[in-house]
Length: 449
View 1 (cartoon, one colour):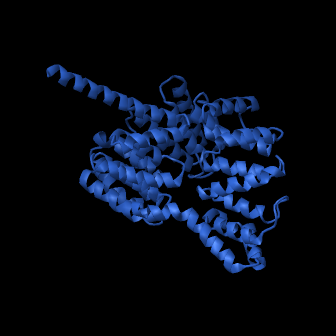
View 2 (cartoon, one colour):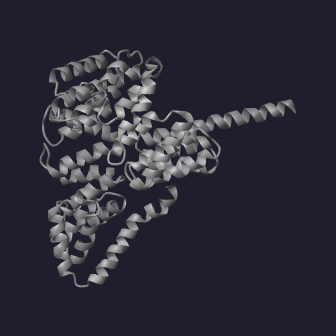
View 3 (cartoon, helix red, strand yellow):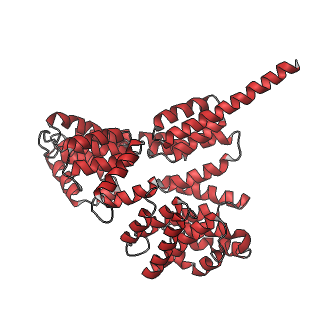
């Protein structure tokens, strides 16, 4: 009997080890770009009741580019919360993240963040990020009492305060706090956060000398192995993004390219370099993009596809563009550019219908630019029959997006199509149908909110 018991225990331990390996294998697949396979493996394990797989699936969906899957992450967090109280913090953070792209989540996220903060006191960085993402509804000044309380014991709370200051939209409002917090930076994360904070302050002050000094320290620290590549990436982003004043693009590119052996930093540089030759020679850009794309990075594939389809830096090559964009078409952005390539006619008239199909699928998957391209396609693209009804429907769908709605060209096109439609009632029904199709996932996910 004792031997049988030990055997059963051994089998149980082995099964647990195998489960862990299966989950790790799925996570590795996701990192290499095989997200669909990873998703299937994790779903199977999650449906069998393995919490570790459910946790990994929630994390995978939270970071997914597909907005529908990001919404579905909430289902898995709630499933986890039934058996694992630690999942509650993930659920609160998920609600907060969803509120950044969908205002309907904002009130519940606000309540959940403060409820968690009141009970456990561990949500101050998340609250700071939430407030900064919703400046029209909340002021980060409401967090000042919490920050002052933390400053009473700055040595104990140094890291928490650095995290809070780093996610606040304008840390220059709290320069004394930054000075106190960054007076000591023994931990690796503190080094990272203080470099970011000091760059933000220098950028607001337009202090080019200080920016250069900090950038050089980061580059030298990376070369010496004292600073991680992620620090270079985050600090480069501060200089490249125009959030705190005039762009410091070249300094940001120089900083990111000092760690160009890291894929993330290389891709950051490539996004700015591919349209115009700034610092990176052609051969370096292409060699790096091709290497990273071969490892399954769809963003690299999209950049290569755009380079060849639109003739950036090289003579346009639609065949090469198709090769890379087909490989990247698993995500809406890749499918958008592939559809646009086909509608350009560069690969022949037989590809036009495929272009329409790809754009329509990309639009329904959450890429609003596709609707604008479809409207243009049916407004006089050679090889496609002029169809005012489709122009009206797809143009109206495009204008739901706030950025695209600002296009006067699109507005004029929709208005002209409205005047020449043969059957306005049928067109409105078609528009309602298309709107319901694209919003169906959101309607189904009302239960998530």
